[in-house]
Image (cartoon, rainbow, N blue to C red; front, side, top):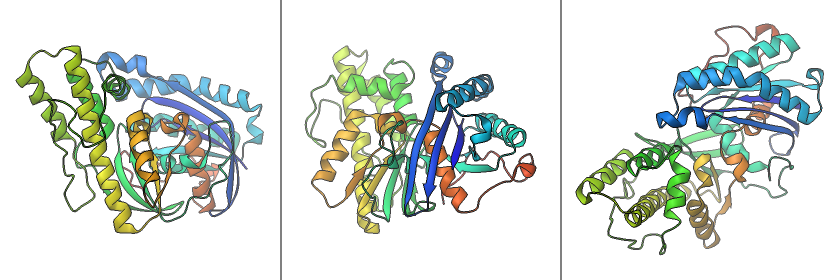
Amino acid sequence: MKILAIETSCDETAVSIVEASGDLSNHRFQVLSHQVASQIKEHAPFGGVVPSIAKREHLKNLPLVLDQALGEASLTPEKIDAIAVTVGPGLEPALWAGITFAQDLAVKWQKPLVPANHLEGHVVSVLLGDETGEMRNEKIELPAVALIISGGHTELVLVKNFGQYERLGGTRDDAVGEAFDKVARLLGLPYPGGPEISKLANLEVKPPLGGLTSKWHLPRPMIDSPNLDFSFSGLKTAVRYAIQKHGELSEADKRSLACEFQDAVIEVLLAKTLKALDQTGAQSLIIGGGVVANPRLREVFTQVSSQSHFSLHIPRLSLATDNATMIAMAGYFRYLAGEIIPPEQALATDIIIARGNLPLK
């Protein structure tokens, strides 16, 4: 079946078409189109995503991106079998832009509507080799632990099966990507901050993770706590205090501080993830979300997995950040579970709603 998916949970307007077949244990995906329109330029002057601007840009971009997706796949609406749309978690004004657009399409095209979870999309994104390829031949041994790390989310999840999840832990305050953005502002770097900190930190000579990197000695919040939760607001505060104490930063200071902050974050993520693998007995680790694009993080987790008992599954960079291809895949699993809204009910206000804090379960 051919699924058209819509993703507008934050500041990426995305539409993809994916051909899906099989069942939960033996499935196959082929990407027919993969379109993303970024809003970074619109939000950069504000140093972060402004929900009202995100909604406005989604409403402007969606018809254009839809036409591009249909054109890339050489398909007409008649050939689409279902429409999947992100309903949460995310920024509710942005989510509503995608939901109302999908509802209108479902009624106009007379196609079933499938609500999809953004976090599940990040989990299943590892099933594809890249945006133009088919599913990897390798099998992911389940259960698996999934670490979801992005601008809005930091979650550890037990993947019992695709479509069946149990939350193990998460952030108590800032998401990891949010912490990167805030520290980037402290260092005078532009938005989005994650890539900027990564570029700056990568100019620094890096010792093995956990070694003394420089004169900066930032805390590793909750790294020794018995639970699987995170807290990054204190780390951001520690960076601010360090800058205030030091005074004006040279470029070398900024490089070494960015490197120390980045390593502090990665050490905490690694420690908690290894603890989750140990507690659950899972043999597979899935990492998804935009922060996966960080080269140092990918390097560290790849190195540790090569010396450990678990297999590591990370999406290609094009599928790490927000996209609709992962929503089509997540939507297919929900379709198999019977979570389908017929077109005659697509506009019902009590059936499909935006949920900013939608859990993954």
